[in-house]
Image 1 (cartoon, one colour):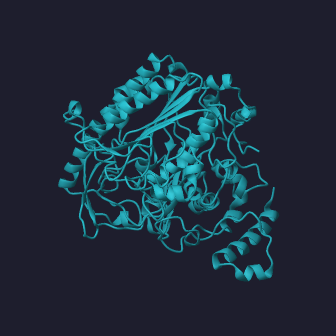
Image 2: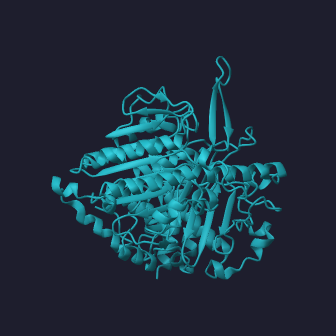
Image 3: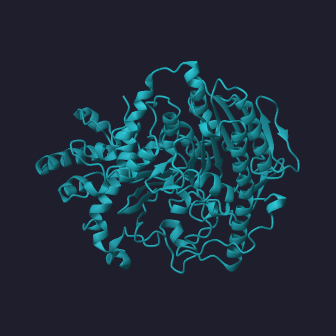
Length: 607
């Protein structure tokens, strides 16, 4: 059974269930996926990429409300390569014990992810560039990454070293490229793989090109016998010689949230001092270096399009362009980095060009990295998997029009993050609690971001009235701006009525599993009601119901997904005996009592 019900246009994917003949498979479209590292959508980086603009944005569709669901490299990449939320992949950090390549393998994903599944469908699969964090010269064969016809991976300790990268091709030993530019090597290897794929016309191909730009440069030095046994020098990304002097006047956009006079955010962010003049000078230099490093990625885009055209397969190939996560530089007084729930970190580029994809179209409906694998399955004619947590993104003119006009399109993005540290490029000593659960609502008429941190701090922003996320509306009694907030923008209802709904969404989504539960949370929360959107859920007849639900809270901060640290969870069934009840945790007991109470209230108030 396919759990795609709220957008009728997506049900067409169910028609792909008949097995394809070899001839039919050879006619299937190809995919080239260009995946950058740490590229922002909010700081205008795409505007400095003329080939991306001319060949992808103008010739394809730009999804401006595309989001990563976890703003950190490895968890985000595993999310998009499995089509599963991070709480279901259980890869929630960039290094052990909660993340990195070893955790990816430990959780069994090496046998169950996009390249393996594609190969079983007759696709050639190729990959060059960064795969994920903690994939290194020692563990690359423990186990070897499965599912590739050809691969040429960047490996630690030099994954992020622009001028001295280490590549590991197919199953050959790693090779150190001294004084060779990483992105240029990725480009050459990608073009070679596309050549190889085109020479096998009887089977379609999926090629991933994953340069490190515009990630910062990391130079690792060994410290034998020391603690730690190595050191890392972090500097701005390195540009190729042809681009090292470009954009001399470029600077970080000075929006309202750039190094503000008044603190913003919650928890440790609200305590950050203003950036110094020296910090800002560094930020602007970093910004320019990021733009310069991206010029070599822009070259990749042009050369890939040219190669596909020369091979006669451009018209039958989809090109996806995206990044694993976004990036902030000085917003909310933050040093350069990612990992926060602010738009700079979670809103990422997504541009798609290919057969049937409208040219020059801009879509503002929400899409996520969790939707990418289901999207590939739909366009490649593969039946959707039962374990996908996302849904296909429509890519045809009619599908996109229906998406735009639908009053019941998916408007929510589940955001989650786990960490106890927040690396800052000019303050390496800072360590903070950064675990949180969030929900982002995107609609033509309203928008919100709501989050609960592991310290149980809360934040709420009206994204229409306050797109820079400067005014936390959550604590009305302690916030003059929130107290005077225009109630009409919350559907004419009090703020607590809004936060109760948003809290319930996080409660339902933070352990969701499967496309139906993860994309139709209102059906989970109100299974007997015809409710699909926040606006519909704001009806006052549901006030008692939502007020009676347990509130999202954490018992403690952890660096990875540990269920018993994350408070109450949504429970579908309430069949339990008195003995069972005694054995349950306090949070579960509170949940059961509240659940029964609100079911009684809801029955009385049912229309």
